[in-house]
Amino acid sequence: MSGRLLKCLHILVFMLIVLRTESFYVNITYVRSAVAKGAGGGWCNNVTTCLARKNNRLGSSKYMVKQLAFSGILNNKANFNPDFITGIESKLDTVMAHPSLVTKLHYRGARVFLAVMEDLLAKGMKNAENAVLSGCSAGGLTAILHCDSFKALLPMGTKDVSGAQHIEAFFHDVVSTHGSTKNLPRSCTSRMKPSLCFFPQYVAREIRTPLFIINAAYDSWQIKNILAPGAADPHGTWNNCKTGINKCSATQLRTMQGFRLEFIRALYGLGVSTSRGYFINSCYAHCQTEMQETWFSSDSPKLNNKTIAKAVGDWFYDRSPFQKGDCPYPCDRTCHNRVFDPQEHTLE
Image (cartoon, rainbow, N blue to C red):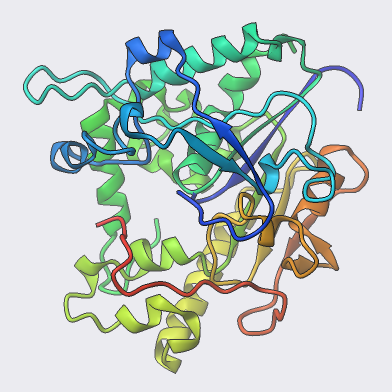
């Protein structure tokens, strides 16, 4: 691969990971220019949910852990991450918005992102010949939204089970609360409502930077928060199913199969692109790139006999393209299907 190249690695929906295997720990670094501009994490969609994060790690770097385990794609050991172990590795947490004098909340994630990028460029990233912008959960969506603008820094509508569109309303609130329109790709906001530009199927087609999409067709976060959120399931019919896909009824599985088909149609709707790659397995999982067991290990999930790490590495280094989807659940025996505590936090 010649010349300077940036490729964006995106996992459609991305949060904090429990690591079970090899990783290394990195101390938190406070970028002074970013401290002055604020900090945050994840998505909060209105003043109430943002206030709830104000005094914890999701709302301020003051409350973040002082060390964070780098695993999966961030691992610096060749036997756990053979293709992506050199260069600068950084992990940041931000939200996009504008300041509010009434609540004393400071929505400054977009400026924090730029401040951190400036700091990394000064530390040597400006000399990079290759760069990967990746993310998990909310960070994956952010990777898509920032993909082309990140490259420029370098010198080179699904319905829920009630029939409503809960997640579209959620992102409408995100735009209103954070003033996000100015930070969303203009190629998208010029054509449709800004809230729709949080949906990758509407924005990814316009991205000029090579993009690799990693997602579980039965993404556990999406099932819990988009397909069957509490607001759409007031009687808790889906509660047991959401803790583990093996607990779902035949009717619920049919609904989830329909959700998978909608996702695949949206993916294929992006059109053909030789610079785009994707790895779509039929697992009940989330954030597979930052967990060592799902990124690269002896029993990691596979498609075409390739782990996620191998598929991404082959695509990134132009060894071979990779655009593979999976057969429907429960055909894939390599999956690490998540099992959740019934009380585990969701979007709501």
